Length: 81
Length: 353
Image 1 (cartoon, rainbow over the protein chains, first blue to last red):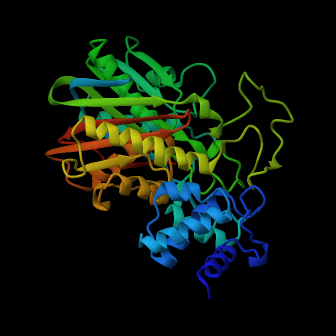
Image 2: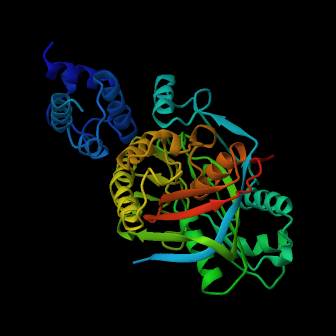
């Protein structure tokens, strides 16, 4: 499975929504299940699943929208952090 | 800048008290699905916390802590010159709860006693006040009480706060003397962001009405009235991992402090995920960052001294311990203190029924 799809799949599973509901513009403002507690739970789960140690600034930025979330995960995976 | 150096102050005697009754985050809070409860506990590490029953106030917890501390030290009540009580959960709107505690503790009427309305930064702001009274006012002994019963501020089905906020009270005795090391304290404030952590109604700005007491579903997924505590979780996370970390970093650089030359970093017990991020940013190894959040949750102004009391009542108390403390929260208000604790006196945490 391509990396982008893996990220979307895990993200959607953790928020208990269908991956079809997730688009680049999906954000905490338009997805009810994506609140601050769930966000930190999702960030922690991505850290565990992909062996990442995300900076807290990353966690804050990832709360913007799904596109930002995915890009930061991709960047950190590429840099091995 | 509110960074001050206080010389010769001994602040090595601390005691804590918590309600006997506890809340289990996995088995209680049935309003929330079990899967979510497990995830929240894994994230915050708050497995349980102490919750005061109706009628048990922060002042009662602080009274128990102070009574235990003064009895253990053999300090006479008439030798106390000031009582400073930091809390956001006072007994009454009027008067200052510190006045009530002066009488309960049987301290003389010659003491100065007042409250400081500060939550999670309350211990740092309280230390600043206590040290100022000792050095500027020439007093000999100040009893610093910090405590909150935050469970009383939360709606029982608001998942943004009800899994984290618990109750606790502490007492710290500060004495003027000839301690060789300095106590350095810095306090910061940004009232522009106060609405990220506050209770909108019930004060003079928006008095209590039937409407403000009505519990409703909120846009953030929480459920509460305008008279319950509201927390914008992401903004508080952002504040903690940016502003607080920056202040800590600058303070450490200015005071030539590092994870190597400090024995402990006592952080306000906000939640484990956030505190872990802060400690990592500052390059502190886990063993130098004591936690009590798994037992007591986030106890507001009590959390730093409660963690100190827990740490030193279960570990070696003799010798010198160079510590860095940081509290951050409502206001927004945050602060840092560095001090050397010497031959610490910390009795076991008291449980209050």
